[in-house]
Image (tube, rainbow, N blue to C red; front, side, top):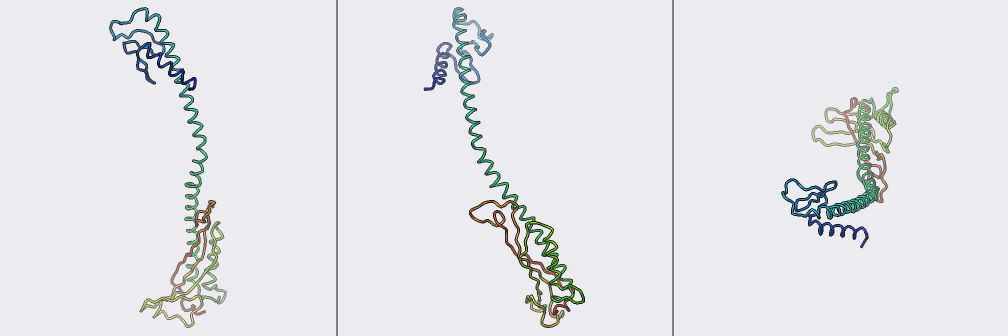
Length: 251
């Protein structure tokens, strides 16, 4: 047994034998009316006549007080040792807590927020390209220095993507979407119409499709590639608008 533990048990036994008291970590009080807490060795006012002899009060009482003080020192030593062990345990666990906080919570949330913001930029590029393309006078060929629908769409996508980082457009597809008024059947073509548009039978829209990707802000090392967290998020965005000059869609 450790010496400090033997001293602790011996002090408790001596204390109980001499005074017949109940030992508590917060309060030590004599059962027959004496209050022997630190700094006091007088008789309580509420106990009446003391059954103990004067000899006991003058000879045994100082020894009891000394024993109580020794007991307090042993308890304080054990508490300090326990607190020290708890402090060391907290220091050992801190790196694991920080790692979990950063790589499981903080960085993934930052990446998801960044992906959402960059997707907004990409959709803005598709929407802007479609708005400009539907105002073209021709679909494929420029006439009288007026850019075609395809040229306007490509230029709009380039203008938007150059302003931001972390977004990439690998392919731009500009096509004509023809919808039959009677049947609602739709058809798409990436080349000019083979015959002039007939607005009495069909409606004509310009559709721009982007094959694009968005990078995460801080790619997280992972054995499995997770789109948006450890690898770019690949997606396809599209937008369509009614053509303002359907007569030039065959050019």
